[in-house]
Image 1 (cartoon, each protein chain N blue to C red):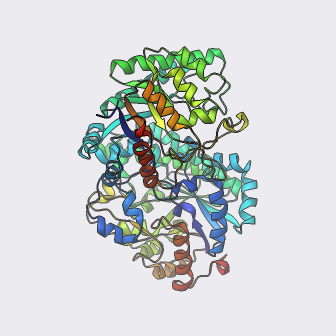
Image 2: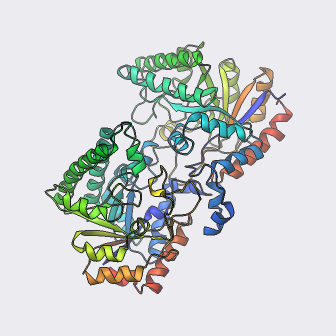
Image 3: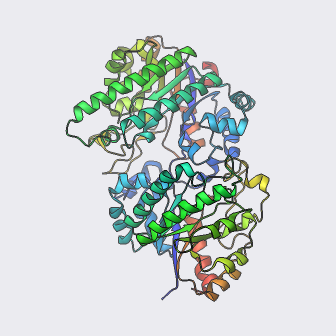
Length: 307
Length: 325
């Protein structure tokens, strides 16, 4: 029995069909690979074929999913029919730093928890605040506001069997200067941590030290690599920095960047982590190739250390 | 007639290999030169606020994104000029993405972003603003849970008309024509658009955007429609299709992606069966001298779609883009 369940964070753009039964005819309309990227049936098959146990849902995909499937449960049943589970969902707690937005942020957080539960997920991986540009730096009062509402969402989540995991982007208003402080300000009974390995390193944190420090709060991972370590504030805090003008990629498949992921996995083994690890291949030119490449690394390199 | 090509043929909504490039500025900087290289000198921009919400300002489809990457629309126009693009002839907004929850929210967002798009037109020197007249009818109907759908639709269209009248005034104040586009899934599909435009209580003129493929799918002959409504035409979209809607797909929640059978509804120019020679003759016969936007949403290979369009215009219709400006 494996300790690690491998999920894949969904970054496929709008998938327009539930299932294409006239696959060959559709292919011949354009004689291109469009037919291969157009239905959930095949995309879930790709997940299964490349060794994943689950899929993590992006909230911006939900409206399109419901158009095709009707209800979250119908989608989950379809996923299960493909031998997969839904590990969780992503959520962004925008405006969490504003006291006057407490009710709104809490309501949105609870709605996300409910949806995650309906989908059968376990993790609501939550970006704790807006982007840095236009909002940061946050003072102590703003951090306190954010920690309060995140903790309250977390308490509700726990009551529903969901864990919220803080997911800090390198361009988030909670950033290098107060990231650790913010974690400490949240209630450890209710707020956990989703360790995005690349985001932490880009922000300038030491990945292995971070895991050593917070291993008891880390409930899941977004596992990805990077070749951009400790990027300067002037870049991280710039507007719309996630996508670079020149095509520079922040994120790479595990093993294709410079992170010491094998060192991390030694720690994962040391502390006996059990649970979901989501591969996140955002920014890739070819999701299918990246899914395969990432899965190979986990199963052939990391699994030799711990699985 | 004044021809331009819609950059909507660069698909960002669906997955395809190398799609990630399309979120980056470098991709677009080169795309302008490819448009020029294919013989086109003017563009239409699909106005898509969706990308603003994710901070995707590399995608030049809103005032926000262009101001972030170029500091001003004026600077953007200079960049286009250097790449061989003379101007942005038309801007199109489809506000359907805002149609959820309650009707008031939809109209609030529609008016906000349409106003913004008109501001963009004014700054870019575009004389045509095309507005999708209603969201897909299934999407509109999903706003209402009662048992008097006819009254709800009537109220929706009345409110729609009020917003359109205000937008038409704003557009006219900047010498911009507001043209209504009626997709085959619209509440005002086919020839219904003509009566609607005539019925609007609008101080400023409101025009029709003739979209050839959408009219044909809705069961209307585009050439005949042009002859019948010549005085109302403010813009024309040359779009192609071979789709026959024999399953009432227009009324389903995702009409561009038929539930029963996957197909590519819109074709690249010349790949479907829309009778462009007849349409061209009808436009000439009624003395149309406005914008013709060439659009294609079949291939995800932008260069291929562009060159197919250029080839069709020159070799099948006998229209050279450079001569036509």
